[in-house]
Image 1: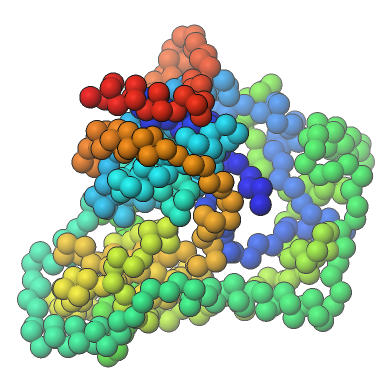
Image 2: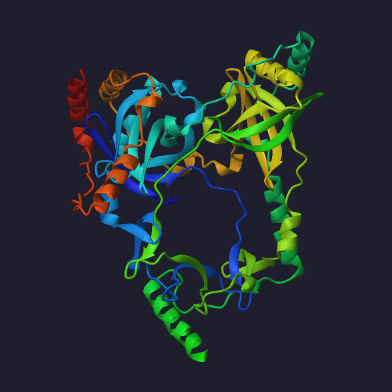
Length: 261
Length: 259
């Protein structure tokens, strides 16, 4: 299975650098629907629209702006944004190793995998193997899509897993829920404990299914039986390619709309 | 300051009910940019465009379809979708308890803090539950409905408090085996030096020492630009990959450097 990379660069520890790609470890099971045009059942695409000129704007005419006041922006180019942290945008540098047991799960954000790129297979295997032997995890910082992440790199079934972590300043302090009162009645305590002991089992996430997903799958299957699915018109140019063409077409159509007025 | 209450309900198992409030546990703050039209600096809006007619489509002409095969859709209307929304009975139903160590962290999704709700007189049930979970070192595996979605989660005690993590469904976690990684033979020497290097570089985990430096530098860059100063564009640093036949040497040199 060829997995699509989210990012590519190198991961390093000590003086060893390994070319890698970042791939997803989670595939959302949400049933997703496509927005369609109810007139012709053609799928809809998200485009950026300039309200002033009343037309679609191709990606090469879009720039990011930081708002400093009403309608006042500081413009930032992609190059400028990439040069905020040039040492971290293509490199995951493991600065230290830790025992993952010391990490409160509250820091865990999102898991990914790293896979070796060509030529990196051996060093990749070594890093997996030695972290497995020493039971350690690597800590690094890297920048992905303009965000700097603190990440933990761990071995997982022969692969390198990368988990983004929250920064401690993002974790809200926990309130002590029972500062004033909270005498535990012994009778209550032993009753609760007994009741829990009766329900102890083994963790098996496969037993639990998303009820909403089941219902949606059922709904779609029922509807598909009742009525033949609708067909979207064939689009001459592939959707997604050449936004410039699309914009030209849109400009044309908008002009026509205006002329009619 | 703790997060705001986002939901209220009660934990149920056996003949025990504990009223709780859910609080957010993590708050992320990021510098936000808007997308502007380069020419006139007008803030852009998102618009849904028909791929066939290449025209903007107003909301009343939009519908939802499930793609059954390439280009073929089953149309579902909003009323039908509404019927699939699970009913909320405000109950976090615990189905079983498992040893906390059995839950692979890869399943952990979002985490919430729990607080006893006022209807739990003096937080007795809450405290009894926290204590029992700690003593038995177990987590409650539960399901509930919140904000029109059904959740699967783990209830855990930490300190004097309770936490509720939403869990990912089993089929959402991609197994490492599907990556089809190749096995590469390594020498015992490489493994030994590699392990020594890791041990040398191991320190206690101190989350407080890490901060989002990128965010700070970005803020500085924005301020610099606001003052009209020129920004020097730097290319990203790229490391030269270590060749396989140089691996042992690189490890030895790293170990020497770390010592």
